[in-house]
Structures are given as structure tokens and as C-alpha cells.
Length: 109
Length: 460
Image 1 (spheres, rainbow over the protein chains, first blue to last red):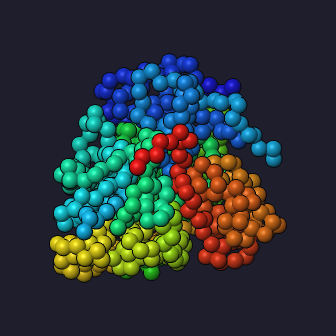
Image 2 (image 1 turned 90 degrees about the vertical axis):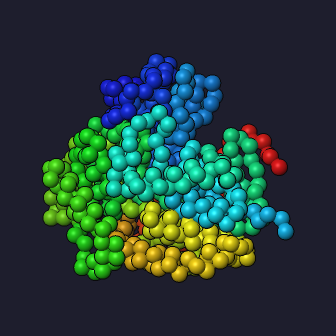
Image 3 (image 1 turned 120 degrees about the vertical axis):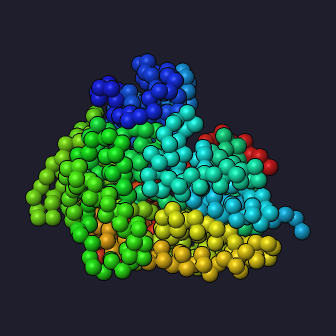
């Protein structure tokens, strides 16, 4: 199982605006820290390499368009929530799941 | 007479200027914005607790961005502004919207659709890997979140945005692996068009020079071959073939890709607007007259969702379309304003149209790269459907029309609804069937244009 720490520190690199208040969330149960004003997508990808596992079995995904057009970045919350990560602001206590084993349709070919 | 029902969809440069013209005419339009704040994509506003000044965020366009934001802030009390609201269908003379699980139908006398554009994408083997993003995404990460999409970013595609975003990354202190342009040096035929806006041309050349000076590998006329990497960690290199034939591999953990823009046309389609094939950009666009009137009654289109002229063109087109609507409805003082302004606005747009044609010649959509994509390359990154499967559906199953090919292959049916695979898919089907691309048709817009929750309360 690939872990969100496969890329140390995360996929996205912060280039500024780091003097913001910390926000705490969990990704697959792992506590991580983001910053107030982050989108959920940035909050997760500043701390790990991916947002979700493709339901078609081709590996991890990390979003694509960041403007709400591609729908690649939908993630689940531990409480059953569905969040489009690029357009959802991060909030204290969010519990994000990147893997949903019951919802996969690996391609046979 | 009851107050006219006027709706603007979108709060980018076109939508804001359209709404402004309506408010100046004494009306209170509804403005539907999918964003949390106005600005659209090009002038997207950073969150309130970010501190970067306009000059840092928008560079040479800072004054325009600030002016547009200020205009909207001033208008806001006189608008029925609905942010974070999705316009998902048009039927029976009403726009269907949803916000926070509450759905509503909004009848209109005039509907101004300013839906903007997305990046136009061309599949590349491996582009479904984590770390691959659209150029627009790379820009949004920086502009709205002060982030780079990776530690070392490769840029690939063509068009002005390629150099703009790469330059913005350079300036912000990101590490660039390479900038790969599929277009060779611009042909002389592009020059007259490009000279229609000399300041813009110079600015573009300046960006390219700055990247060169910084020592960023910059290739023109190159062919992207694949994104290498693995399923668990995503992209780790971009491999391209130089114009001279040599293969080069650029190590990177992120790839930003895009081939200019693709109009967001689903709502125009659902409003039953006629479309026409634009030869210059090889894409279907809604047919509009010089003022932005669509073929469907009461529907007006402005901005990059109708003709891809960029932000300045969108501002002019938004105002012109709104004034045209007021003229058509016989509403004073707007109708008088239309009489006073429409010729000048049309002339501005005509100049930008010449520039657009120059750009299309300088940075052509490389359709041959779609047509010759390897069979094993993923075309539909939503559902990982390959070029080979799409070709098989086109030739063996009789899917020579794009919507039939979609039904057989599911290319265009996934999460993005064909936004990112549709244009390349058309080229692949056309080449497989040996037909001109306009003959295979275009993916029809379907409602809902984006996913809706199942748990919806209907508001009257």
C-alpha cells in the first residue's frame, strides 16, 4: 500500500504566504497540519503525494485542473462526506480518506 | 410591465462587465458564480488572509485585475450575487442552479452566459499519473494558493499560457525542468495578426527571453513522447523528441500541460444554440453575431466561452452583449447606450479577433499528435480508456460520429464529461475513420454539466 508519505513533505511546494494560522486535519488517519486559507487539495498535497486512488486501478491521483472542471479531486471524509478538494476550503478536524476499496472497478485489459 | 429578469452566468471579466452594464441601466441582475469570489480564472482572487499585492499576483495585468475587482465590489450591493452556485441546466426558458444542495429554476428574459474556458489538452502517454496538471492548474496553485505544483516542474504544450505560467513560476522561485513548445518558430503568416496587439506580442517575447536568460531548457517544435513514472508515486520525468529528432528526458515530479484554451460551451449547448466549426482553432464554438447574440432567443454569449479573445476581449464582449440585450428588450437607458457604444466595442473585438488568428497560426493545435497517439496511451484519464480502444470503437463498432464513439468507448462520459479528452478524441476518431475532424461532430453538452448531489431540496 503506498502511503501519503511516499513523497516526503508533500507534492506541492509552498512559495510564500506561510505566516497563516495552522489548521489540523487527518489524511488516512495520519495527523497533518495545513494553513488557514488552503483549499483541501493544497492541504493534502502539501503533506503527501496524492489525493485518492483511481477507482480504475491505475494508481494514485492528485487532481488535474484545480478549477472545478475535471472532477478528479473528489475525496471522501471519514464521516461519509464528499468534497471536491480544489474548491473546498480546509477546515479544522477534517478527516480525509484517499482509499475506498469498495468503490474500485479495476480494468481487466 | 414586470421588472425584466436578467441573469449573468459567470463573474470573470465578461460576466463582471456585463453585470456592470445592466446595473448602470438601473437593473438588478442575478449573477451566478461557481467560484467563491468574483474574478473568474484569469483574475482569480486569493483568500482574504493572503497578503501578496496585486503587482506580485497579476504582474503586468495588475491594474486591470484591480479595476475589475473594484468594479465588482462596487456593484455587489446592487446585484443578486450568488457565489458557489452551479448553473447545471437550461430548459423551458429557465436556468437551473444549485447551491448547497438547494436547487432552483430561474426564468429569464435575457440570459448572458459568460462561462469562460478551460485549458485545451492533448493526451500524452502517462498523463493520467499524479503530478500531471493543466497549465491553468499550475497557475491557480501559484496565484490562489502560493504553491508550486512540484519541486521540479516541466511545462509542455503550446500557446501564450505556456510561457506565461512558466515565467510566473520562475519569478516566484520555483524550479523549472524545461519548457517544451510543440510549435516551431512562428511562420511569417502569423505576424500581421500578432501585430494587431503589439504590446502583447512584445510582452510575450519578453517572457521567452527571460526564461532563456535564466537557463531554462526551452525547446520549440518538439514532440512530447511520454510522462514517465509509476502508479504509486506519479510522474518522475517528461520525455520529448526535439525538432532535430533527438530524444531528451527531463527529470521532474510535476508536468504542467496545455494547448491554449477550450471554450466552456455546455450551457450554450443546453440552451440549443447553434454551433459552427472554427477553422483557425479547430474547435466547435457557439455561433454568435457581432454583439454576442446566440441563435437561441434571449441568449447572449460573451468571453472565452464563445470566442477565445482573452481577458481584455472578454471585458469588451461582456459589456457589448449586455448592451445588446438591453437594446433587444427595448429598455432605456441601456438601448441608448448600445447605440452610442456598440460600434466602438465591435471594432475593439475585431482587432482582438485578428490577434487571435495570429496566435492560432503561431501556436497551432498539434492535431497530428492526437491522431498518431500510441494505441496504449490513455485518452480518457477519468476512466483510463486508451487510444486503441477508442479507435476500435470508431472503426470496428461504427462509432465514426463522436457521440456514438463516446457511447461505445465511454471516452467523454467520465468525471470531466469530455472537457479534457473531447477535442483529442475527435481528432483520433477522425484520423481512424479518415474523415475531416468537423465531420465526426462534437460531444453534445449534457445536463447536469457537473456532478450534482443526490440529496437536493427544490426551492421555488
